[in-house]
Image 1 (cartoon, rainbow, N blue to C red):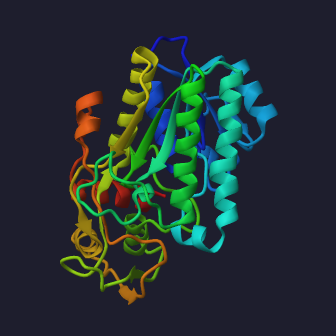
Image 2: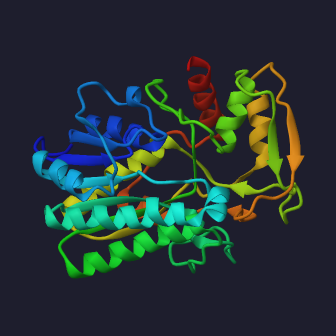
Length: 328
């Protein structure tokens, strides 16, 4: 449990992953304050008694005031843009919302003596890896502006940590999915592109059909393979990483997945098995920026932080996502 006086700023705390972080931090004994511009987040996902500021993380005057007023010792940074194909079409949006905004936020953290910074990074920094599963020592060669924007922020954190007292953890997410098992939060933003949520929208009658993007990859069934991790397990890793930074003062770069991949078709078969409604699927061409397979080597996460996932099961992940979609 955290010291009751420790306060954490959660940027993007009204979004999918950020809102789960707010819940877990409170359960872990931290005080929490949220900054979110509500461009994709929903205010109702944040408990009413959590201080909530509508604003942009790139606004240094605002962020400095929040950090100072709430005496934040840590920051969890989730705010940003996350759609890989969109980043290929509009790269400047991603360098502004991800890299430049993060740089401004990090500068505020230095000025206000924040001790620990947890960064929401991505497996997309690996590009098309030459080995699988992927360890943190694999070469980083992103093939999309989204991946590059995240990797550039990792570099900023690396260099700042070498020059200051700020300590950081860059958590490289594989495919985050599912919803809070207690039904308190889930994916709720508009225009989703996440496979499991799209499938759940079809099964709950919110969409008529969905697409598989690419069926000619060099994989067993021709569709992309991803390492799906339940959002609640992912956030447990964040809280453990924060505890580690505050106690041991050691920087971390960690993969966040289960170390096991599932193809698009396997995911859709699992989703279909949970519903009587037909899952209407059509095939389309590949999307720009998609790698054939991304599966994590998670040994470092488990060894360094003692992380023990509770929801390491594809059916469980889809069940919680579907339950959330049906209730919202």
